[in-house]
Length: 509
Image (tube, rainbow, N blue to C red; front, side, top):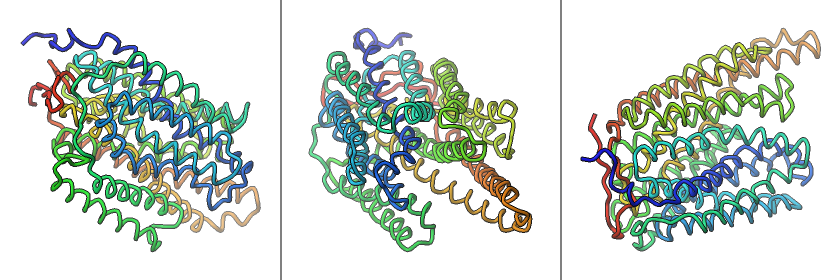
């Protein structure tokens, strides 16, 4: 067997230019998950959004994005990834323009839901385009290294950009900034991307699967969102969780019976992909919770401005870029993926462990900076092979829905992480304040200090859970992922027939 796989000889000569536009689109989607958070207080005031409804600016996006991802992935397989990618970009730009021009609450919430819907079309198309365009193992490693760095670090970049735009321009620019990203990526994609022949899935659309999966995922994501604000024992919260279990159970049953399923169960049943979806979803639970805690710690406890808060996350971004492009991408073709993912999650857990020592006035250079570097390095190293493995060995016609599953695991993980860890932190804070209530009787200054200490105590308690979750991610990656290093990887997308399955030769480990 030759050292250089044959498909690389006929690989798309424009694939690296295409990567620029795919990466730009991915950056826009990831930025949008955090950039609006910084602008939300100002936007709420300008538009007269009530405190009770402000969470819907975030939730409307999350529900549409999380609920429609599997449908978006299947549409990408049916229409073609290039078409879905461009339509997703144009729609996202239009929804962003609507959000930036919003004159009231309803217009804002509608724009956010539309952003989520078009994001659900765009995100799986972007990842599956990489899967079908980069067929050489070494090139694939580099491409997914860049993509992984953006997927991991883009959220922190959003905090910096959101801080700048809100502080020096206007909150509306956190929406308008998406438009040039989307226009450049769409025009570039139109001229540069050449999707490989024979990679579409032209089988009929599974309508029952679309309805059940969308409703089930919306109920699950909304259940965790409600749990954060209304409590885990709230009747509506419990009803949403029960409903999501019933709907998703019915979805799995339906997929096992229909001729052309929305999500072929073979995509989930393969142990390597299943291990990626599970371990990555758990790791994102830990990371999303941490983003929330550190943002509040910097701004509320330490009094950082929005811009300074964004810059305080730079070590994590640097760590993710180095982990993805310098460690993960260089080692991906030399060692089995589990030996990058497992240790990567453990390194991230060690960074999280440092943050359990967080206190009011903790030293940034001595504690927070090294902790963020370890987190970034670990997650960047693990994200890169995880993204690549998520579409590993799939039938070309299933590449879109396999890509949607990795996005779904991250989206659901993010919703769970925000709700679960925030609830744990709030409970620990309340317990701390109750047990130290006598100390706060001295006066306003002492009470303020006590509240800050209580908040940080709550964060530290929740971060201990995040350490355990990352350790569990490492165990799952090491136990389930058993594919060897991809010496001569040939991936989905080089076949000519619509039903061709392009296998990935691997060394079993």
